Length: 260
Image (cartoon, rainbow, N blue to C red; front, side):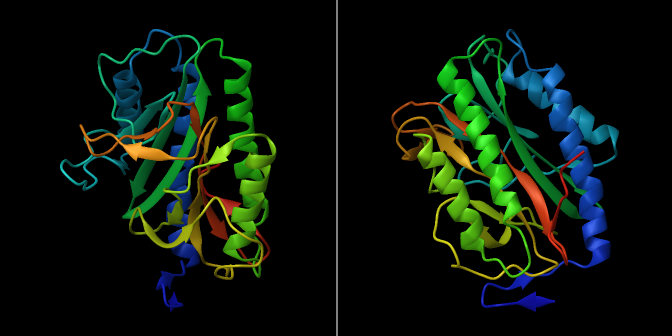
């Protein structure tokens, strides 16, 4: 069933069941990475662990080979360090050091259906501002999810995320947003992390989308690394954090499909 001018495909209970299976693996993977991410490992080690973990469930890494401007994405995990906002490409020579923060964005495909989630990790001992950034970004996602109730609008999600982030002295990335998800990794509607209450599309049971605040310590402006046409970085080289869940709108609220 499609609704609205944006052609948003509502998911059946069977479709959501398949996405739940994919989401559980994605959520468990992000939890397992708590034991993997530490000073001295490379970003490629995170990627290798991710691919092996997903394939051990006979699922497919959602990001590997995603079409890009000049190259398809060459890894199973987006691993973004410090001032890298999203779409960091893992590298055998990029070693994590104590004080770094690293955002890992992963997804799985199960029976043709996608899941997508992300988490930012502190590597060793991090600064107070880095720790606050991680906590506020995570909390902003949690507050956004609480707004996912039938009858609410997308702008209600956007508003609470932006307000919390800016009230704490940080900025929201505006060039990249959450998105619908299903048989494709990216579908309508877009879910901005900034906006006004009671604006945008009304939430209806069967909608499935990601909410993914990307939050900077400094300015909100970002750019794409011209060397790979993938990695997004903060223009002012300030730290950035990223959290994400895949959410299904239910009759009485929502379900976080990427929870474990």
